[in-house]
Length: 303
Image 1 (cartoon, helix red, strand yellow):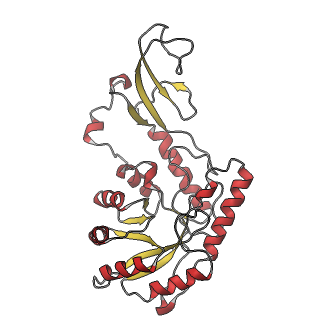
Image 2: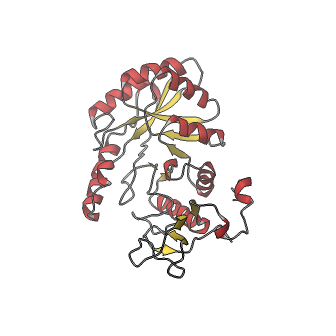
Image 3: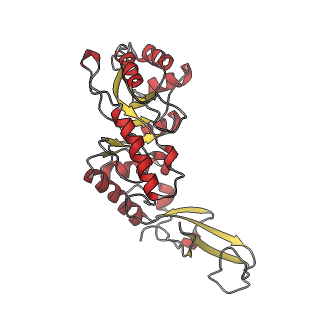
């Protein structure tokens, strides 16, 4: 899939040393292999992949992920979703609550060109969303955010999720599609076994909170929008972020495909942070650093 812009197209065929610095470079072969690996891993575990756009914030890469098998994208905020929708992406999860008249007005306009799904965790927010979408003829898709250990937002697991689901079912402007959660408490755990236990316990609490059926015949699926740090989640039907596209350290084999290319004006010495690939004493040094901190030649663009 050719996703080059007019600006990048002009650089094709030129030496990497012609690039202005600093430059952020992507090895497309590595990135595409990583994307394919994630898609295959998710399929092997029976889950769908909705990658988080914060890994790249680039609509062209989001289109590449969808073409490879992702079901859509995840965005952290409304503004990011607007950018993705403007680029032709319709299936968008906003992994946050959209509150206030200004942002809800923008959400209504976003729904004219995409099919957004937003998180909810308060009755007050349900009231304002229902008021905005209740007369449009197409309800807004919502997912209940469940607090599975992050302690930042979300309904507590258990009976309170079922009660909140009923609040949604009573509002014609909203359609419940599932539950979401993020086990951020696992991100700082270094021990792999402890990390896996934490992730499994968190996602088990999420899936146990899923509401199979609510009043008015509306069915809610298990939408596990979890950042899986160790293994595929048990019984989850969606994953929104399975580690970054550019490096896959958790549960997927992959290679770093994102590199920083820069020019340093400095006198090279034995104590330099970056060893010069050129002769000692040369005041200008071109280098690239891979994800492991190794000084390398810049990968340039696809050959």
